[in-house]
Structure formats: structure tokens, C-alpha cells
Amino acid sequence: MITQVQVRRSAFSETRTISMETPELAEGEILLAIDKFAMTANNVSYALSGDMIGYWRFFPAEEPWGIVPVWGFADVVASRTPGVEVGERVWGFLPMASHLVMRPTAVTDRSFTDGVAHRAELPAIYNAYQRTTGDPPALTAMEDERCLLFPLFSTSYVLYDYLVDNAFFGARQVLVGSASSKTGLGLTNLLSRHGEGRPRVVGLTSPGNVGFVNGLGTCDEVVIYDAIAALDPTVPTAFVDMSGSGEVVTAIHARFGAQLKLSCAVGATHWGAGRYQAAPTATPHAFFFAPAQFAKRDVDWGPGEIMRRAQAESARMSAELKGKLGIRHERGPEAVIAAWSGLVGNRIAPNEAIMGSVA
Image (cartoon, rainbow, N blue to C red; front, side):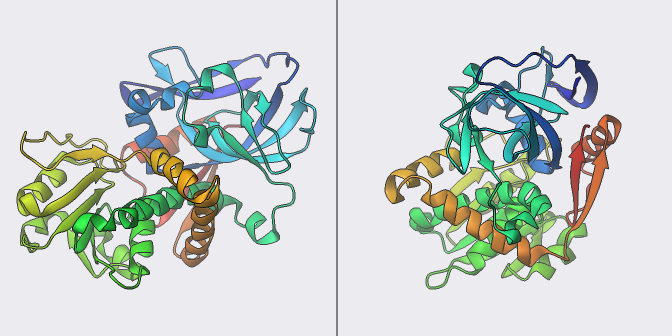
């Protein structure tokens, strides 16, 4: 049987569990048993942008329901694909489910692509799966961190690279909204190490998270959202927002005006807050689409080089975060639903992380 946790697309707090018979594999298909996956605010962002980016289309469900994608590990339990053997362990983009049928294409010793037809037009970065046989022991020992942090820190890296690639858009400081989020703290970490020409790094967060963010030591200043009006409005500023709060974005735009050189949205840790409504003359507040920068650097640097750098930085930052992050494991559909409810309700502390398993 295949068990799936599904989320109502228009009301993320509503969920259901469904089970179905495991289909007979066709030639060229494999069956994965999903072992474990990360559950973070990033997954809520996937749901929020499910229609705009296409996240609901990776693992289709009957509307009005959807399956939220997650990053995790799975084991091959049946295979009709030459070169992909039963017992292999893979890492990549998975559904909140117990099993998944895939059609591997572009198979190499280290990876393959899911070539199922409905994914052909979706961003390629999410269709690639890493074969973990032969991974170095240090990487094997970081399975949970690889799920929880590598995808988010890879986004942090490509955000950092986007800023560097554009000379920080002429800004002398970077404001990071929701600096306690994994993507936010990854970005402040990378910015803090930039070297010559480094802009000032300001982390924005809620009062309860100030101690956590300060303890990371990667921000020049940590500012609570209610104190945005005290920031110096004359400093050319780039704003990278993981919060998604319209109130926060509006306050930043009102404070800096023409000195706001960049305003980009990355996630929505405050997903229940109202969205930003831009004035016609305001600096655009545009959604940052990481796969586009990955694709640009594949041209600039050669295929796969930006991912190699992003993974190396993800491993470094994950190692640095050990001991500062408590990881708990939730097993079974009900436990996964409870964890999802905590994420949707913004009840998960920044120093807490969740690994889930439907099976």
C-alpha cells in the first residue's frame, strides 16, 4: 500500500491521509520506500507558491488536495530499470508519502532524473536524485542535516551569489527578513564571511528569536520588526525577505524609499500574515526564483559547479550548526500531520527541527 498525507490547497491546516494499492511497475520504473524527510517552514512556502511555481504538480493529487514536496531519503524496493538496483538509497525531492513510483532517466553512477512525463516541464533541479552509494562517511553521517539544511542552505548560497553577481545592487547593507529561518541564517553566515567590500548585515526577527540570532554571531545588528522605523534611512539597502509579511515589507519600503536598491521575496515564514501590496512607484518586491540563478551559473561556470559550491557551503554551515539545533523524529501519518500543523501554526522554535516519516 502507498499512504499519502495530503493538504487542502486553499486551507493548509486541513489535511487528510489516503491509501492506495501499489501499482505494478512498468518497464523502466522503480518503487521507492520513503524512509525520512525534513519538515520546515520551507515546505509551507512550497504550498504557498504551489500554483505559481508548480510545486503541486510534482506529485499530483485530486483537487482541492495537494501533496507538499519535501527533501528526504528513500530506498529502492523494486526496480525494472537496468542499472538501478534494489537496496540503493537515494536523496532528493519526495512527497509526504510512504512510497513513490519513479522512471529514472539520465542514469549515471552518482545520479538520475525522474523522467515521468508530468515532471518534464518542471524545474530540472527538483527532478535530479543523488545515488548515495559511495558517499563519503562524513556526508553519510549527516543524513538528517542533508534533508533539513542542505536545500535551504543551497538557497542561501544562491541568494548570496545573486547578490555578489550583481555587486550587491549598490547597497551598503543587506537586511535579512526572518533571520532566524534556516535560509535566513545561512545567508547571514555567507555574508558575514564575504571579505573585502562586505556590506553590513542586519538580521530582522521577532523578539523571542533575538537571542538565537545573536548567538549565531553572523549579523552586525539584530533588529526586531517593531524597530524597523529606527533604522538609518539614508543607507543604500538590499532587502532579502524570508518572512512574507506584508506589514514588514511595507515598513521597509516606507523607511528606505529610493535607497532600497533591491527588495526580493524568498519565503513566507509568516505565511498567515497579509501579503505586500506595492505602490506603483515603489521599488519592485519581486519573488526570487533560485533555479534561474542556478541555470545562469551553469552557463557561467559550467554545469553543476554552482551546485557543488552550494553543497560544500551547506556541509560547512551544517557542521557549524551542530549542537545549536535539536532534531526530533516523527513517525506515522498522524505524527506527520501534527508536525505539519505546528509548522502552519508557526509553533516550531528556530532551534528545533523535524524529520518525518509516513511509513
